[in-house]
Length: 178
Image (cartoon, rainbow, N blue to C red; front, side, top):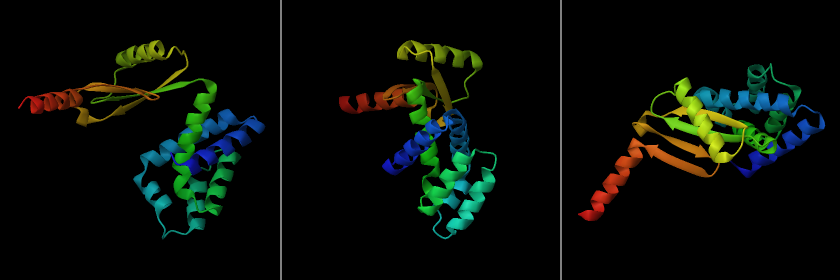
């Protein structure tokens, strides 16, 4: 995360706290982040130096027309300061800061295939046990490159039990013994 994105996110959170809308803005920022992450075209538009900032503003306000006034204000401020490419980072920073304030632990699990609901429940239980927190959010990602197993990240801690990692370890050990 860039420092600028974090500063915008903190300012947005402070404004939301003053207006008692932090939970509403949290929902908005989750939606904004997911929308930008899922759309390569939108990322290209935000990054493009060719597209006029007023056109970017119009497109963003249309795309996020159902969001709160605080989100619309954020978009306008980013447009005024020529910082529209930061919108996704600001949204992610806001979500992270809000979760941290609320004591919510966010875990990311990467698997080669989608998690079944049974396995997701087991992972959630393990994360709760590891963090000692009942407030846990689980983000699940699929990456076929890990071949099998899983990678679990909770804050700064990473547990890599992927087949790709185990094969890499075997390769390194084999290379040392030659």
